[in-house]
Length: 289
Ligand SMILES: NC(=O)c1ccc[n+]([C@@H]2O[C@H](COP(=O)([O-])OP(=O)(O)OC[C@H]3O[C@@H](n4cnc5c(N)ncnc54)[C@H](OP(=O)(O)O)[C@@H]3O)[C@@H](O)[C@H]2O)c1
Image 1 (tube, rainbow, N blue to C red):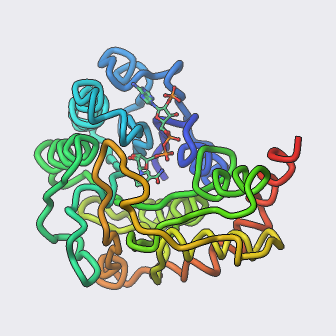
Image 2: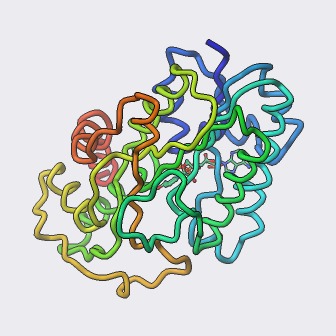
């Protein structure tokens, strides 16, 4: 197998990738080791013929509304530079993208080729990254969209909700945003599936299957933690105005896996149970200390 490179290795998904792919001995670069906005750093870090996984990103969804230039620099312009470097070195790129490229107004799961129409600065910057991969690497660029990602360590919804549970009896969580809670460990496994099956182009949706609201997800996290889920109260998004619009429906279809005869993602409830046992329960120790 060709050499593997993980860019953005210090992030939540980046760490999961490095851990999951450890038996392939990937070259892992945090921002300090390879700043993706620096073409020379990429040129130095990426070996000829490598498979590069780009998990780096500007991920502050609300911050991007007032700082779109920075979001574009990392999520669009740097992705073009990564893609050009991979092209020059004869390699393959697996680029991580997001459900935010869609407008969230659908009522059935978004197909991989559904029309993209982001409603936030972050979403526009990530769409630019997808287009850069498609333009530059039509035969050796893979786009992997994920959504509602959680893992440990890292900033994620389960950690936030468990931390809040220490100080508040009741937690208000929205019922009118629907999506697929997705464990970073499963995304890493899906990326490995693409690598070992020599998938070189196309779009794949790397989310766990099924769907729920943030309210439903919060209750499931409470159940895993042995907390009383009746402490999670339903509210609508109007209760939490935010700078960036949130897609109200973010369910992604999985036909790309089926089309290639690959294993489809497992249900989010099963992934959460395993994630809890393997890593997420450590959040409880963190919040207690
Ligand atoms: N989290 C979610 O719910 C979610 C949902 C959908 C899609 N995604 C996508 O999944 C991917 C991974 O997200 P994540 O949740 O793991 O995000 P994350 O924890 O914020 O990780 C992003 C990483 O990118 C690094 N980075 C930022 N600018 C960089 C630069 N100029 N050069 C090199 N590295 C840089 C960050 O480093 P610093 O820490 O130094 O800034 C950080 O380690 C992203 O493409 C994101 O768009 C995430």
